Image 1 (tube, rainbow, N blue to C red):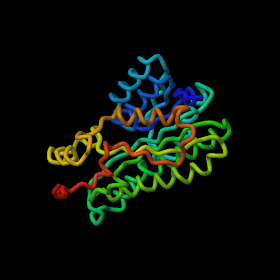
Image 2 (image 1 turned 90 degrees about the horizontal axis):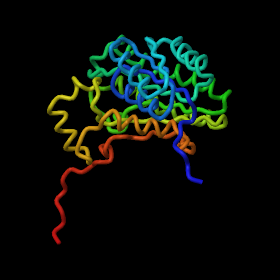
Image 3 (image 1 turned 180 degrees about the horizontal axis):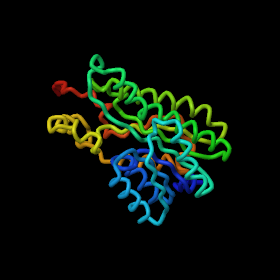
Image 4 (image 1 turned 45 degrees about the vertical axis):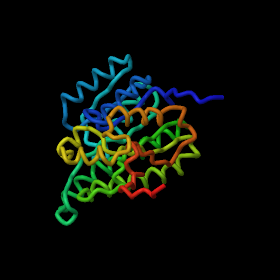
Length: 263
């Protein structure tokens, strides 16, 4: 029998929803039929916009201001979903920040501050979601990482350390969760047009990416969100513990222009 691509359940938690990939994921899940609890840290206007976009799909939205680096936040988000819709079916850890700084110039506060949201929040969210989903015997945990842990970029030491750790967390939890019929996967965007990257993507950076990416362009938020929606669906039921790279072919491109052999 062919797999269907219905969502595994009616409720989803998505962190970092006020802009960028998180906004696209929240709206994409809503279009597929999920009610969404979204978390944002400070961008109030963006949070209100995503609320309206979710509700326009005919599903419900609960948008909470919260810091995912705070251990209590995950419980708040889970409670919002379970108390309103009776289950917690999909959890997407997405909230992140970017710091472009050489490792030797990175202070202790820089390091710990970036890891709070970019790594610790993923642990708190995954742990909370898993505990509930184990009892339900169903669920999807999806971690948004980055292709930068595969094709490493200089001056992103703390960011890439967090993303690499998330992949390890994903694989380990996938093994532990499998007996409870819960899957855990990571989605790793490559170069993607988002507000997070707006400053870092200078015209020169953009030209370099467009040259190096086999598909010839930087990706969009919606292209990443589409993969997440698949991961949240019944169609992904036999996938767990994987890092799916969504990058237009960038990380496989080792082409440097070798001279062709003469015929």
